[in-house]
Amino acid sequence: ADKLEECPDFSSRSFDFVGQYVYYSTVVSLQTCAQCGLVFSDTRIDPQVIQSHFERAYKDESYFKHGRRRIFEQISKLVDSYAPQAGNILDVGGAKGHLLAVIRARRPDLSCVLNDLSEQACDHAASEYGFQTILGGVNELQRISSRFDVVIMSDVIYYEPELRKLWAILPRLVSPNGAVIIRVPNKLALIRFWQFMSRAIARPRDLEMQDNIKFHNPEHLYVFSRRYLLVRLKKSGFSKVIATPSELPIREKGKLWHPIYFFFCKMLWILSCGRFLITPSLVVVARNDESLLTEKPETVRL
Image (cartoon, rainbow, N blue to C red; front, side, top):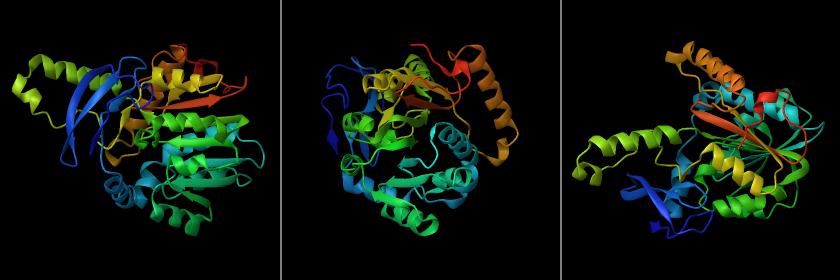
């Protein structure tokens, strides 16, 4: 593994320590850049290990077809709102193509392209659904000459080690009137609160031996705040950036409670004019024109 000496986005060397955890037998620190506010892992595991991991992980058919159904439906509605007739869609980190299949069922006129690190996932998307696929990471995306009406990055950007390069090429992937849809966890406040309480009550030795951070997935290289995403996308050239509550995964034990909880969160978000966004994940949409979603409260004030 390699340790980072600077922020992977801003190149700052001034950090604030959040906590530590162990991943692949390696002690990793979660740091906050004092300049841009990005919360990031200061360690990069060997790329071949990570490649092997993603060839095995996230292949559960039930998880994609059932567990993420509401999430996929929400994103497909957003795509329907922004994609023109016969438009083209790029799903970055699209796994086995289940999200694009939901989108195509809603909008069969759209041309769908899937990108993923996993060769197995790309092969499945091509054979099962007939999607055009692009195998690889950000370097492969950099070689794309086409532009897309909608670029989807759902639960994927926190895996990208070359984050600065991703932000640089993103505007070139999107057509002049296109949109970017990003979904990420919304748990930074919970992580910070838990770490604060741990430091307040734990012994120094216990903190030194900490091997996990509550609410943080050790696979994730970043913990994105809503503010960081809104500011960073505007710096990347998108004139209109909005953040909305995200639907929750479907779990058998919470199949009644989760829709009620999401409805409550959506109402709180609307009544607060976008200030209170408390769902475990959020969806950010970035555009380059004056068009927003039909509901006014979706604009988030910085």
